[in-house]
Length: 319
View 1 (cartoon, rainbow, N blue to C red):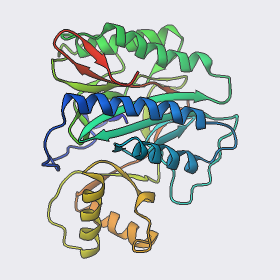
View 2 (cartoon, helix red, strand yellow; view 1 turned 180 degrees about the vertical axis):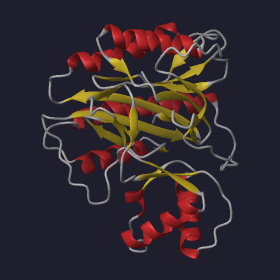
View 3 (spheres, rainbow, N blue to C red; view 1 turned 45 degrees about the horizontal axis):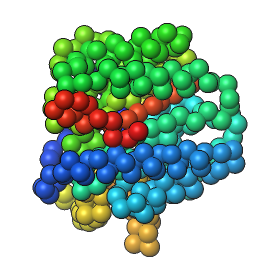
């Protein structure tokens, strides 16, 4: 799940307080989270066929994560064509895959706080093989490059040069990101272009790198109708309805991003959910993640792996 950099205001989309006070995950937890994420990603790729209902795919992905002994690190992202990321099916979503779709599948797992984050692009059109390959090869080239001491600028340079060599553009205001306990987005951000950042990756860090390539303008904007929300602050909540929902979300989802459709129950109908979510957003307890759309309606492809930096090497956890 990507990090969206708002260039207009030059800040990361949101900051997040430390919501979880549980013990830190072990190295074994990080390895297991990555292993499950890779397994679920490959499972999900086989579901991406014409006539498949997007909502069914999302439900199967999230159930598979649970069956493997983890919890979703975030709702299954199933983003089509010009949408780069942050689309998860809504409650009554009837979107059906066709041979006109390029699908990005972004899977997140959480094992005792450790995050596995990985993505793949499926081209059902069979028209965008080179575009798919450009983001995939960019990730492969970065994977070969990584070692303790690699700079963030070197990562971005490799991604940009690889994608441009295919004749496409990297998406400038999307980036990879650090991963921490129960936290999908943390510092540092890993650019998809050469920003000459001299900061080095360090032993003990975990992070996700995710090149995005496009035949469009190389920049995205926020779309409409967010269906993904994320807790950011436990500040007091006056509204009782919102307070109860926030408590339930924190207990069930451990401060991780959640889908609006996950909340639907006999107790919580859609109207009550919407009211509580509005209150929580207004009080800055949560933020929403809108679908991210290419500004020139270009097709976008994505590839992503999670990494951990050890003493003498960088290990890909989601191969």
